[in-house]
Image (cartoon, rainbow over all chains, first blue to last red; front, side):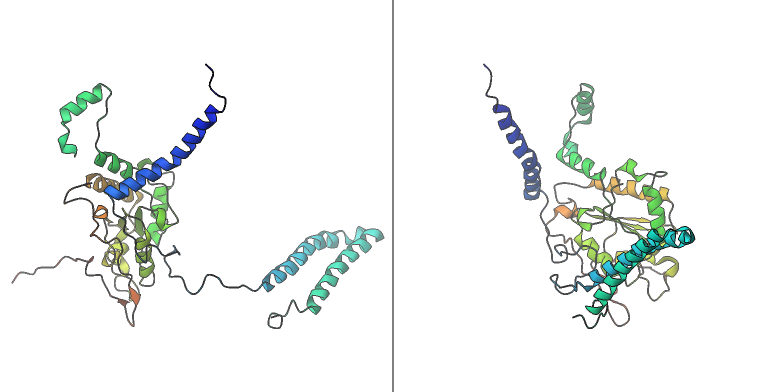
Length: 126
Length: 208
């Protein structure tokens, strides 16, 4: 007699349910018969680095620092391009020179735009 | 429970391939061979603790290599170094947050008594003023071998703890507290300067 091909899946499901439930049940039995639970205010505190938590967890952050980061990152990358540009400056053809100027202009344009939008003034952009 | 098993019968059965044990023995065997310490160091003793955990001394041979960054997962607190009064409340709070059963090793002269900084206004004169200590290691700092020795002493202590009866282990006793009051910063010192329920210093009895 060949068993139903899905019979093995039933066995798998049974094992998959019993496997995590067994240690949980053992832990429950251990707690029930041997080790009494001892909860407390300090023990159940959420923060676990030894320092008492202050204030609310649902605070709002200003997103402005993100803009600062982005602007910084653009010029950080620009510096990487500028160094080889400066090293090879005397041997560059006109096309390459214009290309890097356009690149610089694009970034400076972005900076001026962000500046005029007030992204760089920390106090005003509330 | 172990006393009820006849040792001769036990070894006889063992020779036949049958291993007899008791719940208490199994429980203590499992606990003593997987002690997870809390990962924190306070001063130079911490360097020795790190050396103990690293390959040369290798605390993993005793089952204690899993240093946990969270008190919720730790069994053992190794107070490794000078406890300043600024740090003491945090240590007590961390101890409170550790689940039972929990143990404390007071490592080095500073953690025992304040050590060379005992006269300092900012140094706690021993962590045993606030939390119960199981094993003290003298030394400044103690060598990694000394920490391993303390670890083995702790394993011996765990092995001797009873599961049932009137002298059972503290963590199995519902009347024994597992949390201790956290000291607060006062005007001049920590308030209280010591927990009288925990701190029992030796009294010096002078003759005549």
